[in-house]
Image 1 (tube, rainbow, N blue to C red):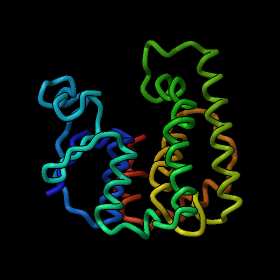
Image 2: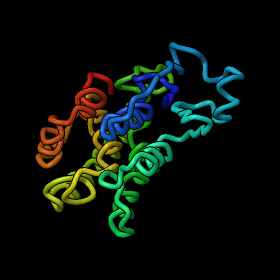
Image 3: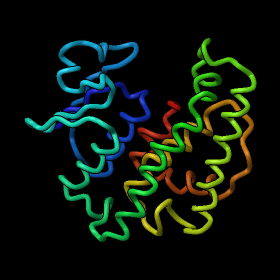
Length: 207
């Protein structure tokens, strides 16, 4: 049985949970992270020296880093429809997965911690405004891409890239800030509503 270590409120854990839903994979989940068992515990660090969730155990195989995990699961469990084998299609998918982790994540960090998590260490008004503006700029890139495809983030078919991107859009929508009018983004999220993984792990009230 596939084991997933990490709390459901983590956006990175939810990437893995949603991927499992798309692939029809059964799993056991253990809650680790803030509010649950500490990831600084020796037994967790033995699995992931970075002390971050998620971690998976697939038999004797252990893997951490959410984007590496979702790629592994798609490759291991016949998910070619989700993560295409064609080099061009896979590269487009990877492009958006990596952009979400490297650029989009950084754009929201300060504003999200201030406005959604109410962190006392993140209450500088100028930095909140700067981060919010940067976040909106990156969301405009998502809007532009969805206008181009008229469907999903990497093209005409749902792919692995839509999981981290939709989770990020959900985080943006659920954070109390001024939201620009992005009709393609709104239509995209409405179109995903029929997917079980989306209902269970994206629009589930957990930013």
